[in-house]
Amino acid sequence: MNLLLSLPLLRELQARGRANDYLNEVLANIGDQQSVQLRHRSFSLHDVAELRQIMRERTELADALLLRRLEVCELIGYDLVEEEIAGTVEEFSTLLDKAVSATANQWIFREEGGGELVPYYLYAIRIVELTLGAKMLVLDLTGLRRGLQKKIQIEITQDMLMSGATVTEVLEDHACVLESQQLTDAYLTQLDAYLRTQPATGTQFLARLPPWHEHAVPTLDGADQVFRVVIDDMVDYGRDDTQLWDGVWIGLPVHPYAQVFDLRRAEYATLHISYLTEYKYDTSLVEKLILPQERKSIVNSLLHRSVSPGEDLIMGKSGGIIILCTGDPGTGKTLTAEVYAEATSRPLYVAQCSQLGTHPAALEEAFRHMLERAKRWNAILLLDEADVYIHERAMNVEQNAIVGVFLRLLEYYSGVLFMTSNRATIIDDAILSRVTAHLRYALPDADSLRRIWGVLAEQYRLNVAPHVLDEAAAAFPKISGRSVKQLVRLSKIIAESSGRQVDMEIIRHVAQFQDLEK
Image (cartoon, rainbow, N blue to C red; front, side, top):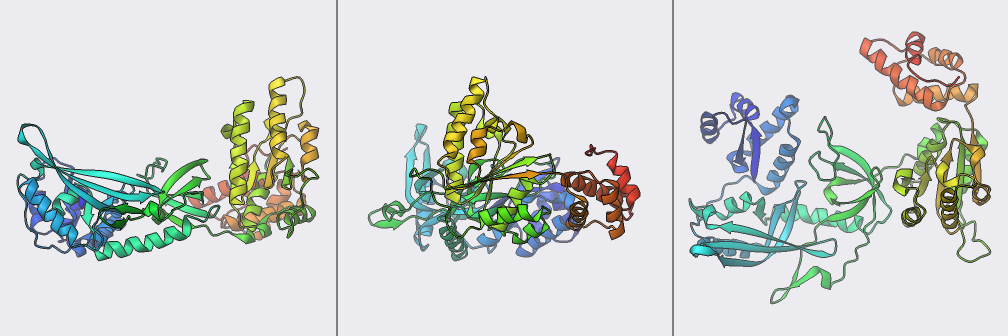
């Protein structure tokens, strides 16, 4: 496997006495190059461990992609094996056929875009005649990915063999490696996890993607990205799907890639199983939600009901739970949906206005898909800032059509839907009549406000004395929970930067930079 290493990293390895004769020669002749590409077998296993140690100690030399490739190389192995050298396409074809026939499954593992090694079945080795008598070797490989055969070709020209090359060297130049027991065992472990995960529609996972992954969002720090996804892979494998006729029926390797829905970006992605870890719900969060007890009780009863509330007299009409939350900004409307999603161990699917649009026809299709997904996943659906869809109807024809579409779809929804609005007085009467519960939020009273200060101080690990929190609650009696959170966060930053404990002087200082409720 080829590794791209920066010159400073190699120099540091050399300075630590870990450079072998080959590496010393490379460094002596590197010239003005700032990086060099070397085969992983240029290093010993101890050298690789030292490279990792260097990148841990000197973060300016760290390279996330290189670290991932070093992990891959450990699976491939470092042992140098004496191999015959091929100088022509015909010789290479013979050597490759011999090497592949000696493996258990005739697989070749290929490094994919995210750095994972995936097995392919080699079903043909072809010599293709080119112009002027030139020849090219073509390797035809296939595997099964999400119910369909994924076929790739590897092309090896005579020029690649001019100086002589082994099967291992040529395959590694194409990011490939022959099957080995170690690679197969690692793959079978991933396959077992995949076969348990792929059918689990609606199960929430954490996806951790390296910064170079195609689904990752570019960041300045180059760190791995972690976000929530839901399994939504409807592929069903039959026996015929997983086999290929090659004189006899050959079982194709199933690539452990599952389709997931990214709850952050509201789009689908196909991810390798190695990037997924099951999400752990925090059911204790409901204890930290500071709301009047009667409001918590009604939500808890609705979401934990043991029997269905039943259907309408008209068959198929809504038996769902629709909760409308209205009140001032920052009073806990959205937080209620977030906390109860955790409390009931269900994904929270947030529908944004930007995803739905405001054209009635497009809105109907987009919102119907959202309702279907939420029902399929047993998710809690949250329509945040829903004003445009639930606004009372008047003379605006398009606005009336939007509300009409919304009403029609809600009529037959049987899942759980939270809607939030800051404007309780503008909601259409027909919407209100379909709501299971209307929760009205207000700024917290004195007792609730003090508890919010305590919960958030603990959450953000604020270095503060309890009496300071009492003083803060008394000094700012008319603020929302969101404003408290902003004061806590900013106070922590200022205190840590100055090496002080949070006190009222700091809290009053940061308060002048917040637009607090009057």
